[in-house]
Image (cartoon, rainbow, N blue to C red):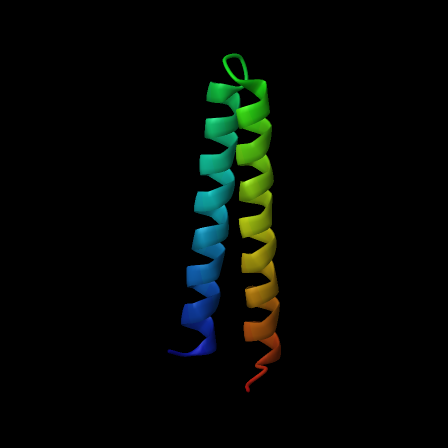
Length: 63
């Protein structure tokens, strides 16, 4: 895979995660606020990991 394809995949994963986390947070907020907060934190961690991966793909770091 080339850099452009990996960038598109990672951006797509970031968008899907942000949208899914937002929807889940607002659906669960009224019923179980602690669970909604937990889901939002987990979604944030995933987005952060995808952003780090995106940075590494752009810098083209290799082992």
